[in-house]
Length: 350
Length: 272
Image 1 (cartoon, rainbow over the protein chains, first blue to last red):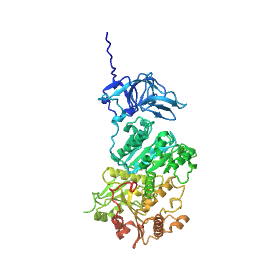
Image 2: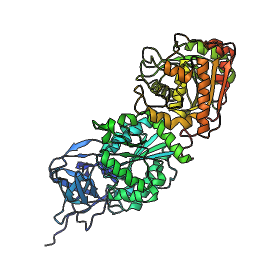
Image 3: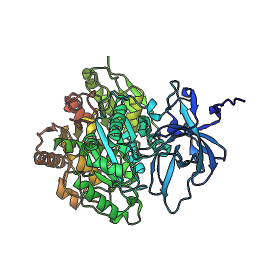
């Protein structure tokens, strides 16, 4: 008796589509590959939630959170993760078809290590990869921003940090708000990191006219991506903000300056060429001092310090010579934004 | 036919009311904002400026910082932040199509001159030309404690020193017209006096204007900037706006040529 093999055709409309997949139209799915030989970063995966642990909810492509239930079907992207306060993981799937939810924005891979204070990752079972009309695996890069535009905004600020949770996103949001209240059209760019809508939503709330991140250039995560690709992505994102009419852009580089991709970005000339002024967000005085020294060795002198250190009860006693130390409120003041623009102008003139 | 005068209501404590004299037309010189003194005499100012505004075709906006919400508008870094209120008004007027672009000329008389020079110092990229007359006192480009100078002070926001020092060069690069009545040499009950201010600035408005202009010129020289300060006294005038306007101040406010046009880059020179 001949047995026919039935190719499963899951009902995609039942699946929860994660934030990371937001640029891929759902009607672009024409097929399903059940037994992939390998998984590449950015591939769209259909997975089932098998055990809920660290991540109890995911971020949907429409900007809402969705609580997870065992048995949920999710469309997300394959990607690596570098988060010192959570997981480090790589792209892939285990031989038993399990993989881990590495980030709530919809990034799955295989956990390598985790912070001592977090639970094991929420576990997923791979049902397969999604295919497009041409039978090729759908990947985030399929719908990435087109290149071509090369003009950058008139001024670009880049915010660096001493590590995760140093206050970089707050600093970006503050500066975006100050520049916006000054009457400028401001773009905000999350240049590196792992797909998540928290930061970009905050930029938008702060008044950014255009908000973009690396997912718009086809990456679920920039961890372990080639530096050339990340640099090209940053250029493209900045050019896109300019194309959409932004006069100024504020860029956030994720993690700390010692993180592998960030360190490499800072060691090369491209990011510095795109940046007119730097800000450093630091958790405390000591990390600020170390980071400033490392940046100085790269020829980078930030315009100001900000970050978690400014919320310390001893913040008023901090001093770094002439280097301004500005809290969130001061960064959001249009007068500060005005002063920063003049600092750039004077640096350019010098 | 004269310029049309319109009243634009604001939002108490957020956006000041404003009088709008004329309308902006493409190709005209940039709009002029004129700030009143502590008497909030905007009606008389509009009336006195109207003929010159009509002759030059310029749009003139006169914000009204009411005393209930902006009692000390002359010092924009005070708690009520009159500078932010003006930025909100500008944003609203741009949105409504009343104002073009982002740049304008700024003028002020008496307390309005205090506000105007400090606003320009904070936001030099927004102001093309500054014309100020008869201020009671000034912020000097020196190390005296803020608001007399750029030095540290309990009266200033922590970031104020950064704001002033970072913007000093751009501020000095503006075209600045300074006027004071030649008879405005009387110390009256509105004149801020004291050991520090009298020693730094002089006893009356005439002396203080002269010293401020000298200090600006010296600071510009130190920055290797050309002297763009136009200083003169207004003949036969004391501290009265209408009299000063009739004696030439209206022309000084409205006919001083702007260096740049508002269609130019808003972030002047950053990527040059």
